[in-house]
Picture 1 (cartoon, one colour):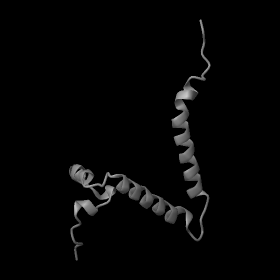
Picture 2 (cartoon, one colour; picture 1 turned 45 degrees about the horizontal axis):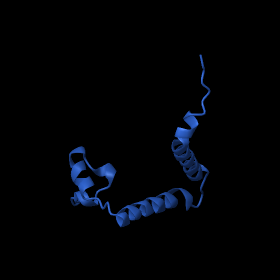
Picture 3 (cartoon, helix red, strand yellow; picture 1 turned 135 degrees about the vertical axis):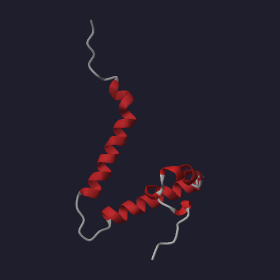
Picture 4 (tube, helix red, strand yellow; picture 1 turned 90 degrees about the horizontal axis):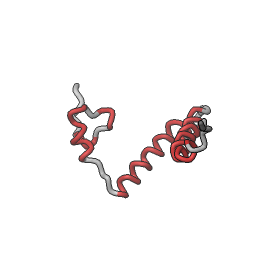
Length: 89
């Protein structure tokens, strides 16, 4: 038995075809409350998948630390690039 067709609005990003991408993005909620809700859903999804498990490992926390390091490096890159040793002639 075939599954019922799902409206584009209810599909996840990975299930959207390239031709439907514009319609899918147009249906997103870009208000501050909608963006906050999206971040909250992402946090809870990450937490339940990697942190709140019976037999957890270091993987979930390591991903968070590496992500924090990458974001911190990106934020401070303008200051870091001026500290390079320069060869003066």
